[in-house]
Length: 125
Image (tube, one colour):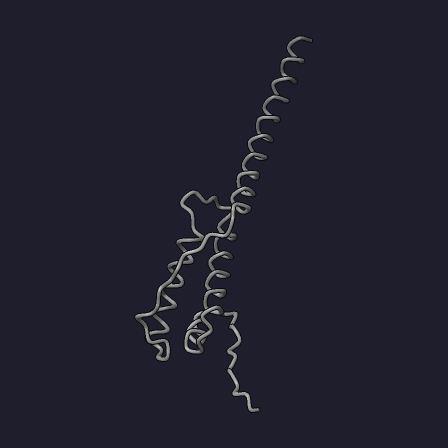
């Protein structure tokens, strides 16, 4: 009888330890997400964005910055999708923020989900 009680207690202890480890792992992920938005400044004053080469160079810089901001060395297999989604969103947001047609064209050529190209229209009074 005593042996059965010890076995049951040991199983409960192991189950509690496993659940505790899982819970603390998820809490760490939540804390990382709530800590604030990470960002990286991408300078492009040296590039001519009106030509395809300059736009492609800026796109490359944006992608590198997105990897630096979103990718972490200690990711698990379950979070690879989250990192990939973060990179895609960061690149799309940066390209949209810059808003230059040549850069958007480079983005659209490299991605299956194109961004809309908006053209400014002259207002007449």
